[in-house]
Image 1 (cartoon, rainbow, N blue to C red):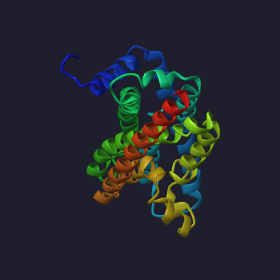
Image 2: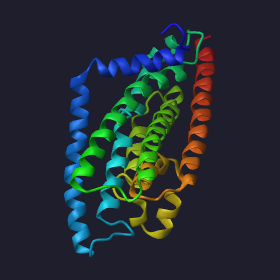
Image 3: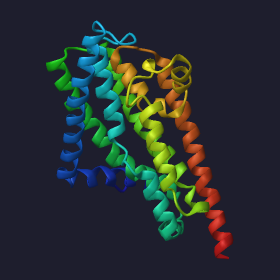
Image 4: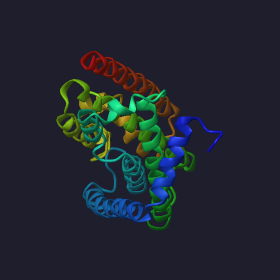
Length: 261
C-alpha cells in the first residue's frame, strides 16, 4: 500500500476488512436476497391486480428496479449517522483530528471500502438471479450503468450521513437525525416504492432530492430508463455532500478547539 494516499489506504483496508469477515458479508447479502424474494412476491400480486403494469413499470422493469435500488442501499451501514454522533460525543473523533489528514475523508474512505464491496457482490448475485427468473432487462446499457449508479448512490449516502452525523458536534447526539434519515430514504428515496407511484407533486419533488439519487436513480436505470441526466444529478448531490461533510467537520473541529481551549 506504499504508493497509495492515506485515503486510498483507508479504502483498501475497508475492502480487506469486509473480506476478512465473510460471515458478515454473507448474512447481509442473504438478508438482501430475502427482501428481494418477499418484495418480488408482493409486487407480482400488485402487477396481477393492475393488468401487469404499474406507473409504466411492467414485471421485468419493476423487478430490476427493486434489485438495483435495494443493492445500492445495502452498502452503507444502517446506523452510520448514529455511530458518527456517538463517536463525536465520546471524544473519539477529537482524538482522530490530531492526525495531519482529514478525519472525515479517512472515515468516508474506510467505510466506502466495505460498503462498495457489499454493493458489488449483492448486485452481481441479484443480476444473475434476475436473468434466470425474470429475464433480461429492457436495456442492457441501462442495467450495466445501474451498477456505477448504485456505487455513486452508496458514496452519496455515506458522505451525506457523515455530514448529518456532524450535528453531534453541537447537540452531542445524532439519534433523532438518524431516525429521520432512515424514513426519508425509505419514502422519498424510492426504496419502498418507485417514485412514479407517489402522487405527482410529491413524486416530482422527490426525484430531485438527494435521497432519490441514492436509491431511485440506480433502480430507474436498471428498469430501462437510460437517462444520462440521472448520473449528472447524482454527481451534483455528491459534490454538495462532500462540501457539507468537510465544512461540518471543519466547523466542529474549531468548536472543539474553542471549548477545549
